[in-house]
Every structure is written in structure tokens, then in C-alpha cells.
Amino acid sequence: MPSRLSFPRDMAALRQLCRDLPPPDMTADAAIADQDSQLTKPPGSLGRLEELARWAGRWQHTDRPRAERVDIIVFAGNHGVTAQGVTPWPVDVTRQMVENFRNGGAAINQIARVSAARLHVVDVEALRPTADMTRTPAMDEPTFLRALTTGMQAVRTDTDLLCLGEMGIGNSTAASAVCAALFGGGGAKWAGRGTGLDDAGVRHKAAVIDRALACHDGHLSDPLAILRHLGGHELAAIMGAVIAARYRNIPVLLDGFICTAAAAPLALLHPSGLAHTRLSHCSAEGGHAHLAVALGLSPLLDLGLRLGEGSGAGLAIPLVRSAIACLCGMATFAQARVSEKE
Image (cartoon, rainbow, N blue to C red; front, side, top):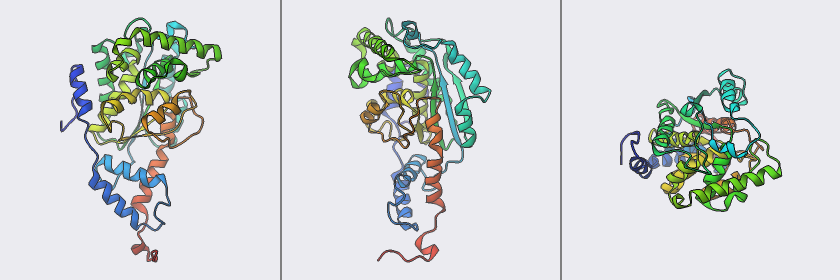
């Protein structure tokens, strides 16, 4: 098993990197479980917060996990499939929203500020659009590897907790196509309203997805090929960030539908490919609930969000911090001189 992260030069190296993902620290996990059993509360009374503390510790490889240095990374990209009329918004909006992020005017800026998280925005491939996936692969191999490496390089080594988000006009179509290829069901199952489609628009979007699936039918048995043929630059970058976090012992909060779809191929490439991630919330975007079930991920929040930007992941930061604070800050029965259950 590689002892450190390396950037893949070809698809074979990337495949090996995905197969050799480091395991969790189960010694730390056991130590946290033992500590938790002594805290001044009934066993299990903090519900999923107890599991979150163990999750953070076993992936940070410590029985004293931290969530002080939290990064939110928003990857932005454009999509050639917008030429098929799958969104009412012009592609210029992606660039305009990136500027809005950098100027502090978006929802994620406010959430990052309230959560005391470091926000980074990465415009992948300088926002050049992918190819139209209904006609040709969205990315050739060098572009796919370059976008994925961009995501890997964006993950800082001093991060305690990583939150991932995205921005890209047309990327819900790409995400839906990736999910349909990975898990079946066709465009009708996975296509949602995205940035505001009406019923006719959703039907058209589903038909476009089905055309893309038919175009790439001979390549849909390989999760990496699926992401390359049907995904986008920012989706590839998100997957790269998820891989890098695993090698750098950083737990990850996934955001909504597009972000989860970008990470999904890793679950088919490794039995525990997404074990170091948690699903921050269940998006109102069509398909996200199906995807969560397919991946065995249970969302921490359900607020009807469908914005993207990493907004749901940012809102889940206080949950992880609270879980860690309870683990590390509560007194034991012995310390508090509280009688234990007989």
C-alpha cells in the first residue's frame, strides 16, 4: 500500500490509487468507544453525535479528534451539454458566481463565516466547458486526469475536516447521467429540476441523458470511464479531493446531489471507498435520495436545500464540532463523582 499520496500520470495509476485506499485507525476507534462509555450520560443518548466522534477519530487516526481547521472547497466547471438546452441559465453564470464567491456575496460565504471555516474556490480548467457528452466523451484522458489532480492538489495537509461543494451550469445533467450509468434506471429516474426546469424541461433533460448513455454504451462498465465520459471538470476534481483526503487522514463532508455523484465511482472501485465521508444533507434535487440509498449513506440533515455551493456541508460543520466537543470535553462519571448505573 502506498504510504503517501501520489498524483496519477495515467488511468492505470489512478485505478491503483483507488484500490489502495488507506484503512481507518480502529485502535483510535476503540479508544473513543471506551472513553464514550465513561462519560456522564446514558449510553447512546447522544445518538449520531457519538458515531460522528468515532468517525472523525478513526479517519484522523487519533482518539482526540479535532475540527478547528475546517476547509470548504467549491469546485466550479462548465459543461458542453448545455448546448442541448438542459438548463434555462446561460453558462456565463458559472463565472459570475465564482466572482460572487470571491467577493463574499454568496450563501456559502455567509455559512463559511458563521462556521469559522476557510473557503476556497477553484475554477477547474479555467472554466472551459467539457465536450458535449451526447456526442463525444466529456473529457479525454489527459484532461480528466488533470482535473482530478487539481482536486487532489486543492486539499491542504493541515485540514481537520473537509467540506466539498460545486458550481457549474449544467452539472446536474452530468451528475444524473453518471448516476444512471453507475446504478441504472435511465434519465427518467435521475433527472431533476436543477436550476428551475418545468415538467417539460425535466422530460427533455431525461431524454438528453438517455442519448448520452446510448452514445457511451460500450464504456459504462468502468466507474472511472463513466466519470470521464459523462461527468465534468468539477466532478473529477471533487473525486480527486475525496481521494486526497483519504490519503491525508482527513474526514470529508459531502454536499448535495452533484457532489455525491462525483464521489460515487469511488464506492464501486473500493469496498470502503466512501467510508471516510459523511453525507451532510439530503438535497431536494431529484435523485439525491436514490443515490444516498444506493451508496448506503444516511444524511445528517434534511432541510430541503438544493443550492449546491457546499451549503449543506457547511451547515453540518457544527454537528461534527459538537460531537468532538462532547467526546473531549465531557467529564467521566469518576471525574464528576456521579454514580453510575448499577
